[in-house]
Length: 292
Image (cartoon, rainbow, N blue to C red; front, side, top):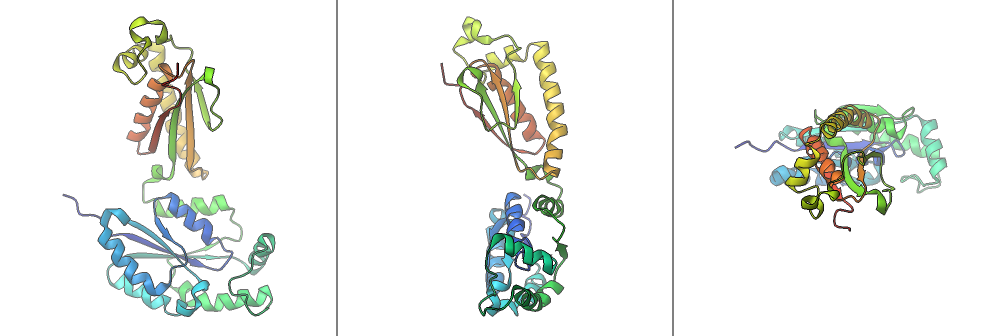
């Protein structure tokens, strides 16, 4: 029996306004258990809990920043202690130019967390830089977000932390539907299978659905159905990695027939199984399968 892997712990830190919120959301999309603004004094306890949880918390991300000024000076020591204890701890420090940080705060009209004395934003940023310098020295990677869009920052984090499991960055929903009940407005990709003969007109299949073996055998017993499915799988295998590269995290693929009861459920189910075999996280839904 395989032993559970040690938890991978990512400490997300850096300057206020440099993109920590975006980073933690990106890690959350990758399956990390995320804790924002954790007092660094609790880091040893969190590493213990993650190790004890085993597979339940294999990926843990913690935001440590200037908001916890009282404990911030101890951050390097706690990070070193966690590493010496054998934990896999990585520190990602997000940085940006003064001009960029000032612009971002001006655009959001948010108050800097260290602005409690009426100082100028420039003074507060310099103060934060000084406070964060010891943590910055601990960083495994420093990301300057000055010229990065949110999408580019996400892509950079995905590339570092996906660990060869790129497919896990995209959640796919495959949904069957019936055109007579209206188009699904949530569709990113939509395919029409009404060109296939309709099992509804075969008496022994009419009351069954595309999830029944008899209907599936009928649908995939047609040469052009199999040819369509092969082309659909080939296209999806090509498209999905490019969606991931461009930062898309959720994709809805809809397949429709007349009533959403026979052909589209059979195709949707088969496509879901194919994508699951490729390693994607897939949900298969049949919107109209029970409708008359």
